[in-house]
Structures are given as C-alpha cells and as structure tokens.
Length: 188
Image 1: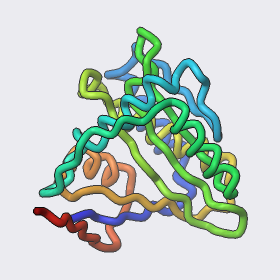
Image 2: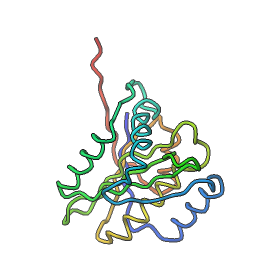
Image 3: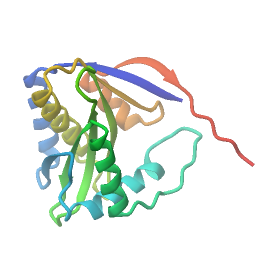
C-alpha cells in the first residue's frame, strides 16, 4: 500500500536551512547540485544506474520489481518529452567525491495555471546510505522549486508505507497523509 502525502508551500527558509545543516553534518563530502530540465552529460550515466536501482531497492511492500536498465539516451529523450509537454523538471543530486551521482530527487512542476507540483523519486545509492543524502537532495530541490515558482501551493508525493526511511523524511518535512493507494500485481 502506498501513502499519498501533501506538503503546503511555501516552506519556511529556516526549516529548509535546518534540514540542509542536518544533512551536511553527515554528508559533507558530497556536493549538492540542482539542475532544471537537463542533466549534464557527465552525470547522466551514473544517474540512470541509480534510477534503475530504485525499482529494486526501495521498499514496496509485497510488490517485487526487477532492476530497470535505462540508457542515458532513453533518459535524455524522456526528460525532453516531459519538458516539451510543458513540465519543468527539477533534479537535485548529491555528487560523491568520485564524481558519480550518489543520491537524487526529482520534482515535476506542471505547466502554468496548476498549483500542485509532484515529488517523483528520491533515492540514495545503496553504497552511500546513512549520510542524510535523501534529506539533503529533497530539501535542496524543494528550495529551488519554491524559489522559482512562488505560485505553487503544494507538493504531492507517494511512497510505500513500508519505506520507513522516506516516510520518516516526509513526516519530518511536514508532508501530511491524505489517502492510501494500492498497487496490484497479477501473478502466474
């Protein structure tokens, strides 16, 4: 079962600062960067590996997923299609000392006239967990989105109720549960 949550905007800068400081205390070796609509070519290969791991590693209750193999070209084409459809895509990443993407968070801002943004994936590579990188990228992305889009009133997110780590971050950030959503898998 997945839980749908909403966060009212704007979030106070003091709260965003506190989350960023909390994250920096454990993950100071990582560089946090936010990109709008396009990811630098040198980061795309490690980003798509991370996104492929999301399906396998993120807790999903009783639903089992296989790791998805996403090519850099397919990722770039899909992102371009979303932008062409009028969405503004914010991607905040934590870059490890070796230059690879260790964590990511994506927020999709709808075309003008709509007031709710959508928090898509937030994920930390299994080798980089325990450093508050999920909180770091999610807070930085939220800061960038609300600064550029003061018209937005809410951010919507959804994740498995068994995903204790992301549920804890969402609760800490003030996301409020509004509904449960089930996923069904046909077996056999």
